[in-house]
Image (cartoon, rainbow, N blue to C red; front, side, top):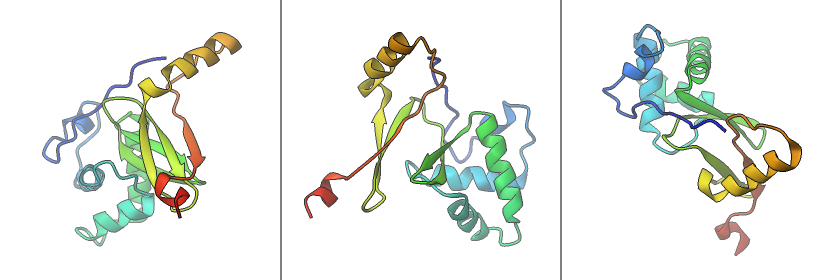
Length: 147
């Protein structure tokens, strides 16, 4: 498995966009800022659009989707399918996996180290060389389990 690299997570540092040969447009900066401001949250494209439109109401949804696709293609942003819908987050400096509560929708990050042995075992047992594997596991969070 190949190590995962990450861009800067600073609002002022858009060099991550430029480092992939992309133009740093006003629209891309606004979208990047919305993702960075979200911290560890996982935003749907609609949530990114809402955050951006608070600053630039004239920005079209199609522009936001295209920019998200470009950021994902460049490895700056991770797209993850959580419970049948796509969410986006700035690519972390470390690979991680997701636990999603099927009751409340909470998302918890699980660092790669917690699953590294299991993923290596899958490779050994199947002969597959896993790419940049990311797992999403569904279940019930501790808070919902105690209700």
